[in-house]
Length: 315
Ligand code: UDP
Ligand code: MG
Image (cartoon, rainbow, N blue to C red; front, side, top):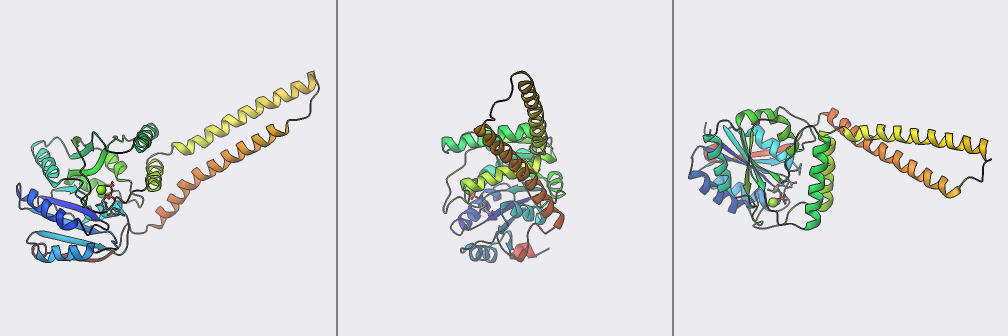
């Protein structure tokens, strides 16, 4: 099989049919040797019903992986890659923000440029608020300083890659999956293709500010241990400062006789140090918690059932 499309879907009842039609039309211009893998990530609307209809009626290879609950897009990507049989796999959203035609350009590029293993779409211009853009910029600046792998600002997880890279990504079976980082970590040669995200066909994005914030923390903790070192540095800094202060106090006592100690200074110092200690504990906790969950080796996703189209069932 040449190509696998991997489509994570969460509450996309208004989009999957549109997406299916657009995708099949775009792919058939280049090849008939393809499959569509939809992951129903615990949708609470009619997404599964729509997907069942598509699988029943379709004359193409369609596979619907129905999760037992919502496991998140990253788990969906992993499930899709596990089931993909294609020589190339493409990760694409179901909401029509990412046009299948662009995916087919990626495929054409990869097939004509064997020196590349992956094509990633990135947004040159984003239609989003100044504040959000600022947060995103700060995140990329921070994570690139802290982490050993390179994160490219604006790169989406709309991408196409070859079998070598699929297998490399699958070999990383960690529970906390920060895809952007995993893709950067495996290396290979990536070509960045500019694209413009379309508006959602229907429904709303699942990202809230807090989700994005958690996601950013996730990325940093998954791909850098620098924050842990920060606590050591702070500890050293404060020990040094307190030693100097001790010297000052002793000299004052010997030379001028001591005055009544400053109460506000004391309170401020206690609060400052208490705060820093809590922060340090929190940072250690973030890593410890991940370690804890990771050692339990729980599955990344659980499948309730798999629905296949006629063509997919034939060997
Ligand atoms: N998605 C998913 N599981 C989730 C959240 C989202 O599979 O828990 C899917 C969603 O259906 C869509 C894609 O991931 O196909 C991207 O989600 P969304 O459009 O909300 O993100 P955005 O495009 O705003 O980054
Ligand atoms: Mg979207």
